[in-house]
Structures are given as C-alpha cells and as structure tokens.
Length: 110
Length: 115
Image 1 (tube, rainbow over the protein chains, first blue to last red):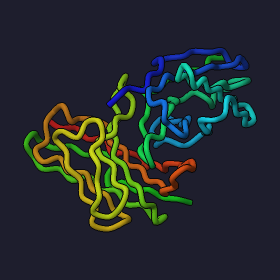
Image 2 (image 1 turned 30 degrees about the vertical axis):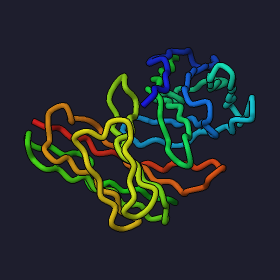
Image 3 (image 1 turned 120 degrees about the vertical axis):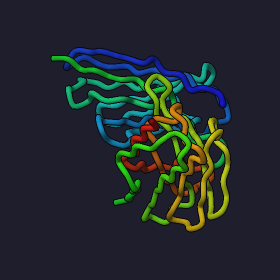
C-alpha cells in the first residue's frame, strides 16, 4: 500500500508548542485522524478532521489540513511532559479502512 | 466503555509453529483490524474484516491468515511462524459509518517473539 509519512522524532521543551507533520497519499480520504500511544498502551484517538475542513481546534490541539498538498499537522500548545508519546496520523480510505502513518515519537524535556 | 481484548500480552513461539492471536470486542462493531507495529515503520495493516466471514487484505498479508466466525471475535493466524514475524500485534475495532468519522478502539497489543 501507499505510505503515510511522518518524521520519526520530535523533541521540545516543556511549555513550548509542538508541531507534528504528516503526509498522506489518498486524495479521496474522507477523514484524517491523530492517535496517541503512551508507553505500553494501545492507541487512543486524540482528534480528527473531515476532509472539507482546513482547521480544527480542540483545547490545546490544533489540526491543520492542506488538501492540495495532502499535508496534515497537529499542533500541541503549551506542551507538557504528559504529552510525551508516539503520535500517529491515519487516513480513512474507502468505507472504513484505516491506514496509519509511521508515527512520531514526541519527547518533552523540562 | 468499549473494550477490545487481546488474549495475550506476551507470546514466545518457535519457528515453524502455528500461532493464533485472538481479539474480542464487546461493542458490536462491524469492523475489526489487525496491525503490526515495528519501530520506524509505524502500524501496518495486515487484514481487515468488515463483517462476519468477510475479510480484506491489508498492506502486508503474506504469511498471515484471519478468521471471523463471530462478530465479536477476530483471529490472526500465523501458519508457520518465522523470526521476521517477531513484532507487536495490535487489534482494533470500529463501527461502520459510511461518510462519517469512525473512531477505532485498540487492544493493548500482543508482543510476539519467534525464536
């Protein structure tokens, strides 16, 4: 299958903003998602965006979608140590198939 | 709360063994998924099932098969385990909503080591 690409690592200082980027491939994807995986745990949905939207804000999280470039980003404001995790973007292809990215490991240091 | 339960957290199997990984969900979800997670490669879809007895190959189905005889249970089968199948296996389920967002709920994962 075609890849959903993310950079592997991101390191930020506590209190700064984090921006995690994702490039997807299927222009017909209807929904795009961000999932969070904490150490030793399964994935949990953080937020999602419908493909006809450019931006979605949910408390400290802002999702930006550039459909022309097939680029998705997740901004975390005021990043905390509890935000340290692996973040996966995912696209919904067809009716219900979910394809995940390579994951970005976010490390927050004091 | 939705619960997706994988039968084992850790498994160690020998090369050539037939391995069954079981996944059960309790929310009557139509869709179930098996992924494997490897460092630097993210989650890769092995198989997807959208209904009982229905399945669709994912990106890396080679060496695997699946079974969905009941709606709540989705089994991943390694016909003859090999060392390159050492990985973390994640099961997920979701409702089927065409044209709507569908949150996938994940199990805790099974870390399989093939020796």
